[in-house]
Amino acid sequence: MSASSAMDLRLPIGLLFLVLGVILTAFGVVTNADTAMYAPSAGVNINRTWGIVMIAFGLLMTGLALRAASRRRGRP
Image (cartoon, rainbow, N blue to C red; front, top):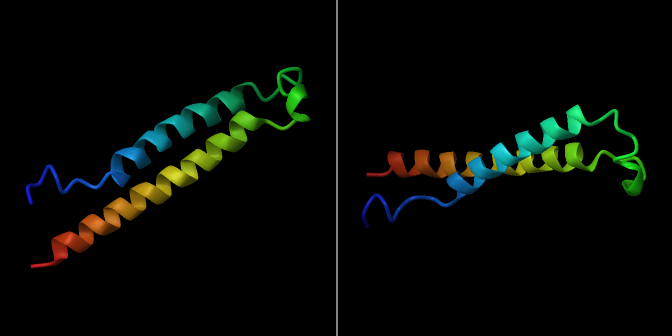
C-alpha cells in the first residue's frame, strides 16, 4: 500500500471542521449583542453554539487520526 492511499480521511475532515467551527464561533461572538438576529431562535446564539460543537467534532476527528498515525508508526 502506498503512502498516498494510506492517508486517513479523519485528518482533513477534522481540520475542515476545526476551521469552520472557529469561523462560526467567532461570528457568533461578534454578533452576540444583536438580539434581533437571534430572536427567531428564541434568543439562542446558534452560531456560537454550533461553532463550539464543530470545534469539538474537529478535535475528536483530528485526535483519532493522529492517534491512528502514531500507532501505525509503532508497528514494524
